[in-house]
Image (tube, rainbow, N blue to C red):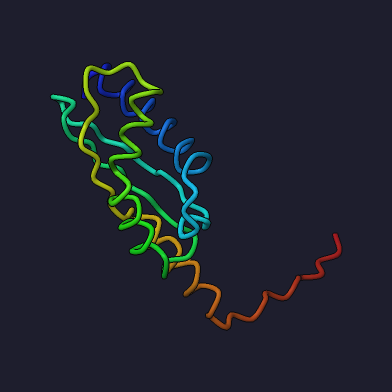
Length: 122
């Protein structure tokens, strides 16, 4: 990946976080949303945005709201970034974040007795 793409990914990610958290007033986006990864194509026409949400049940709703708000988000990105044109945004679920939450949930449900402390007097 070129240095230019890496800088674009970083800047787009920062701006998306700001737009979603501060400028969008949709109550369905009230949950904690993280933009975990941004990958812009080499020609800067397409951009994959991976998101994760604290509540796994809400992730499909959040993804569809963001996808439907693409026009507004691109307009705001245009105000914040100096790019010849804004890439088409595709919002995707970050499977890694979901897997992590699922593993944590499984670990919480395990009934593992606490280890007994050894009283070695030395």
